[in-house]
Amino acid sequence: MIFAMLRRRPSGFSAFTIVWFGQLLSMIGTRMTNFAVSIWVWDATGRATDFVLLLFFAFAATVIFSPIAGALIDRWNRRLTLVLSDVGSAVATAVLLVLFLTDSVSLWHLYAVNAVIGAFLAFQVPVYSSTITLMMERGQYPRANAMMFLVRSTPGIFAPTLAASLLAVSSIEMILAADVLSCVIAVGTVLLVGIPETPRTPGTSPAKLWQDSLFGFKYIIRNRYLLHFQSFLLAINVLASIGFVLLRPLVLARTGNSAAAVGVVMTAGAIGGVTGAVLLGTLKAPRDKMLRILSAIIVFSVVGRILFGVADVLVLLAVAVSFVSFCIPLIDGYTNTIWQEKIAPHVQGRVFSARQFVEDLTVPLGAVIAGPVVDQVLEPWMRDGQPGAQMFGGLVGTGSGAGIGLVFVVVGVLGVVVAAVGFATPSIRRIETLVPDHEAGGLPRQEATGGVAPVLVPTEPEPVLTEGSQR
Image 1 (cartoon, rainbow, N blue to C red):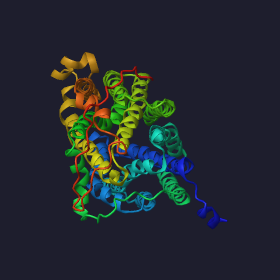
Image 2 (tube, rainbow, N blue to C red):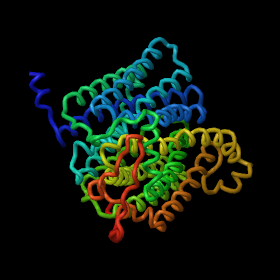
Image 3 (cartoon, rainbow, N blue to C red):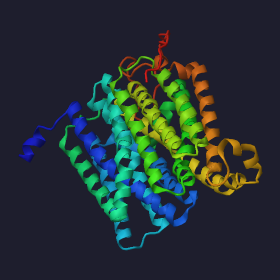
Image 4 (cartoon, rainbow, N blue to C red):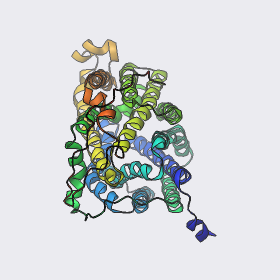
């Protein structure tokens, strides 16, 4: 029976849905673990720096391993890569479970485990993004990206509340065990489905691993439109990452270290993310995706950052985070679709990993900068009677959390400025017409040395359509 099922493996959208379901279960377990561990760290130390260092080690490992991961993704079978990424995360979480069961866990253990998980995560996002183009038709890319974002956001509706409930009646060990089990289920779904082989360029031999690790960066740099687009996305990611690492500390500071309040805010954010992802999946793919990306960035910055920074009640904090999460699938989904349409499938692993390297680099940098600056400079500066409190106290309040709130306001203002630059810069605003789709423009010739020919550019690009943002 089992062998018969394996011979008739589902393919196409049905296969993608099965894999998607496995990832959804896995992400619920991961979100529960993240919630439980973050509460454990905050209760143990009460310092923003210790909290953001967890993120630093995870994202730093992802950044370091991304170039190598991209080279291996394009060399290996996609199914093997998917399985290895999930198995690695499961083993690392199992080690953390043993540490808690033996009552021998310490902060450095958490940092080390996060680094290992981050290394395996270097494979996950690029390999899933590139697998979408193998399993789905071009017109279904936004729908598939919306589904993958649901994997990131839907667990946030249930995971914080479920984790908080389990912590109240059992222990963190139960949550870690459930996380390991969810990873095993995710591996099983990948083994059940059919995944097409990655197209290969005829007559070429593999480059050296170090050359392939640099290939994605060269590909982007040698096309000025892709380079400008990636630079714009980098600026947005820098600002978003600073807010990302400080979001939970601000909620805890403004709510008297309430784990329940964090759960409410994260759940509100997850609902917003699900709403945005469902909207992305149901809307007809627009010709002018950049208009929706730029509009969503403005809403993200004004409501999700500025309002969040000045909010001092739980309801406003939850509303602001829900808008953040609503905008992210629109920004990420349409951005990923543009890259999937422009980059040929057989080089997507390397190019997408180069993007991941650049964009994820902003998170550890944000953690290194934001944690010490908040703890050592801004929080003391915003205490009652201090100069910062006199200047900005009327906007973000004073005392605990005020320094973090000021950071969010500044980040929100800068986000609006970056969006305005995107609207005003033709190479960013018109990226969809300046760079042809990989089928329409033909595949760039790939040399055995790992070089890349510049992407062809139409002589007279079609004008970008002007349409209202449908949200």
